Structure formats: structure tokens, C-alpha cells
Length: 107
Image 1 (cartoon, rainbow, N blue to C red):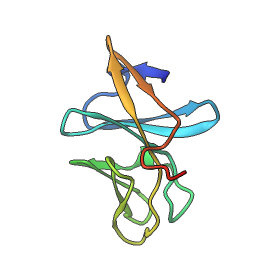
Image 2: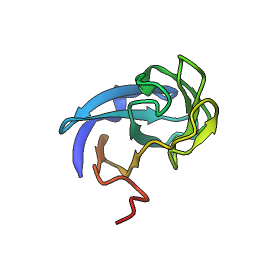
Image 3: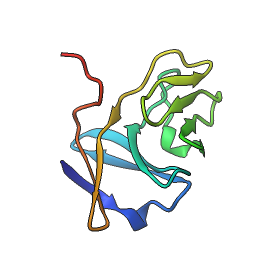
Image 4: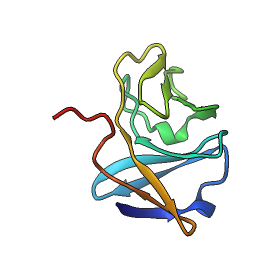
């Protein structure tokens, strides 16, 4: 696991972008009070998802309104039809750690 930031760096209802060993990740503090890590690029257009709106456990791209489930990376709203990777998150002593091995990655 790689330490990315502190929980205080990501207030509830916000997302921050982080470069984690060369991969752009959006760290999201969702309305369910959990932290999520999702690849920080919409699969429809090359737009940073961290700049989008959080609604429940979804993140909406500001450009065309594609929505992604923060738990699975699956698109929940068009025009995106391709999922984006999501990454395991652990919180220890106020620090957020992620693994760069995407969840659900098929070998």
C-alpha cells in the first residue's frame, strides 16, 4: 500500500487528484463517509474525474455528465460505456493508502 495523503486533505463530498507512482488517481471522500480511489480520467473523454461532482457513491464527469460508481468503476450514466479502474483504499491513523493493483483486475 502507498500513502497518498491524509483524511484531512479530502473533506467529505470532495475529490483530490494525486499522482501515485505515475498514475493519476482521484481520491474521493463520498457522502457515505468512505474514501475511494478511482482512475482520474473519464473513459469517454480525457477529462480529470477529480474535477467532477460527487453524488452518493458516484462521480460525475463535468464535461459530458458521464457517471461512474466509485465502488466498481462501472459507468452508471452515458455517454461513457467503458469502466475505469478503482483501487483498494485503507485508512490508518488519519492517512489514506491505496494499492495500484486495480480491484477486480483479471489475470
